[in-house]
Structure formats: C-alpha cells, structure tokens
Image (cartoon, rainbow, N blue to C red; front, top):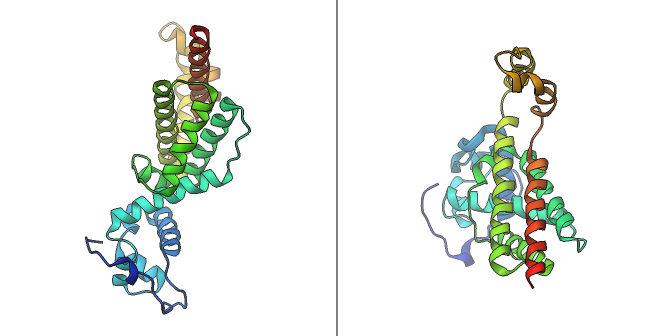
Length: 237
C-alpha cells in the first residue's frame, strides 16, 4: 500500500462490497489483524486485504494512506482491547500489575501482530488514553513527575518487550517449542556438578521455571523497586 491520500469526507464507502459488507476502518483493522495471525507481515498488502474483504483494493485508500498507517491503527486497536478489560481499584501497585498482565496476555492472544507492533508509537486515541491512565495511577500514588515518567517508561517497555519476546516463542511451530523446552531436561539437567556446579545445583528449578514466561516475576521486581522508591520519596517529604 503506497502513499495516497483521500479527503476524509470521501472515505466512507456507501455501497456494500462483493461479499455484502460495508467497509469501515474497524472492519479493515479486524480483517488485517486476522490475516496477520494467519500469514504474518505479508498479510498487509492491499491485494490480500481487498481479496479478504471482497473489495477493490483501491477502496482501502479511503481509510488508510498506506500499510504503515494501517499498522498503527492495528497497534492502537490492541491497546484499546487491553484497556477495555481493565478496571482500576485505587491500589496503584495492584492496578499496574493487573494492567501489565493484561497487556502481556493481549500480546499472546495476537502473537504475530504483537511482534510487529510492540515498538510502534501511534499517537492515536487508545495509546493516548493508556499514557494518561498510567501516568495518572502513578501521580495519584504520590510519585513525583520525573519518577512517574521513568516508571511509566520502564513499565510499558517491559510489558511490550516481554509481550513481543513471548509472542515470538508462541509463534514458533509446536515442534520447535517442544524441542527448546526439552533442552533444559536433556542438556542442562544432566550437566555434572564437578564442571557446572551452579547449573547442577539449580537444575530442577531451571527445568520447572524456564518453560514459563518470566514476565510476572520481572513485573513484580519492577513494582517492588517502584514501591521502595515511593517510600523513600515520602520519607524525604
């Protein structure tokens, strides 16, 4: 999808497509998201999208200028889906933990899209809402503005990075995932203590732990550090 601009007033398609549906930004994003999970990044072509929608590919330019514009819309849609399921309780640490876990789960629900979108900044409505919401949680908890921004930055980057990392693993063929998990049992658990004492001493824990995402543990470490930071701030005041 190359650069091409259609005036906003002319973007809405009034006639149904060949499949009897009326195009909209929401329908195109939903279809693109489904195709990405089925075919990867190659799904973002006007020809493939047009075929899936039963529409002339050129009609997509009424809604998105190019594929990157569509990718940003997909990214924002994933953010919006996470926010729609999250309800704050007023406990800043519990709320951020819940939100982080929901962000991670949302990435795993759409692994290929998560890998493509994790590093993007959209400047769109759901992302703006997320930035405002997370900063609000931190500032209301009592974090000074510089700390609120640093913790926001670390929190979001951590969630997105783990989401992309774990999504890449999920997107592997099942045989490859099983083979990688087996390495901990077949190789690490059998290393002798005389040559690899630390691995041998912790082999049971490695076999148990390494097959799962470390995101919850990493998130708890981040929130513990933030809690300590907040306590130090209050002690100084």
